[in-house]
Amino acid sequence: MTGEQLRALFEQVRAGAMDVEAALERVRHLPFEDLGFAKLDHHRAL
Image (tube, rainbow, N blue to C red):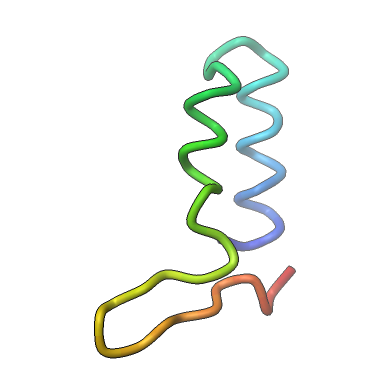
């Protein structure tokens, strides 16, 4: 997730288009995504 995507997520929460729990679920896997054979660190762009 890039900084811009994270900002858009926060904007959705602020606007009421997404609740906090849904937003937490989207970022819960940051900063890593486990693919089984590798862990990707998507947070480097932040």
